[in-house]
Image 1 (tube, helix red, strand yellow):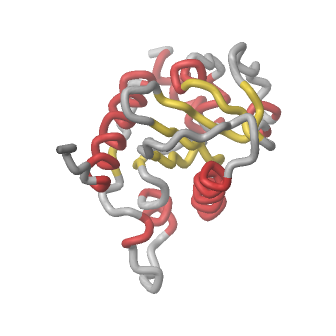
Image 2 (cartoon, rainbow, N blue to C red; image 1 turned 120 degrees about the horizontal axis):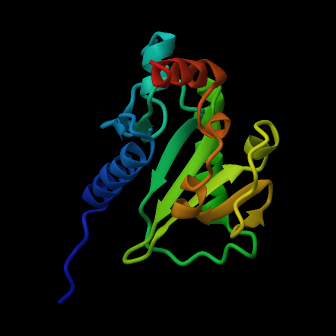
Image 3 (tube, rainbow, N blue to C red; image 1 turned 180 degrees about the vertical axis):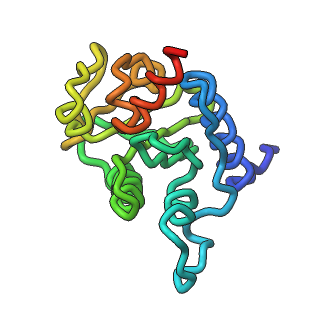
Amino acid sequence: MTKRINSKQKGNRAELELAKILTQRFGLPFARVGVSSGARPKQVRLDERATETLTGDLIVPEGFRFSVECKAVNVHVDLFAPSALFDKFLEQAQADAERIGKEPMLCWKRNRKGWIAAVPLRAFRFTGAELPAHHFRYRDWLVCSLDTLLATESPCFWLTLTNFTQEENHDSR
């Protein structure tokens, strides 16, 4: 008899794991939003900061350029061919990011597999950051392992100019 998997718990665990990975990488606090975007009432008007905080699956530090969408779906998708499921994930990430004026980042974890990350190629063009060595293109998106993406060193790729300037000033003290 197979053990039934609670997909909500699985998603929550993946979000916590991803928040921990990003917190360790950047030394800045990332956290789960705690309420899925589908469960949030659409009629409630929130101020700009609250909307930004509650959009995407993770609360990101102020100045982080990306809205993060996290998926924990154990379905094989051939990313070298068009995929309705992957397109749906990308559309959700794009819509959330556009709502708050950020770039989208999709992070996807399959059971007993590493994380996959996808960001629009334009995120590299506008920052001057180099494309990771090991990646492939899916439509207008760069797809690679999350570890490979997180190895991108350019602070301008990850942080807005305002946040980057504040970090430089803090580091020079």
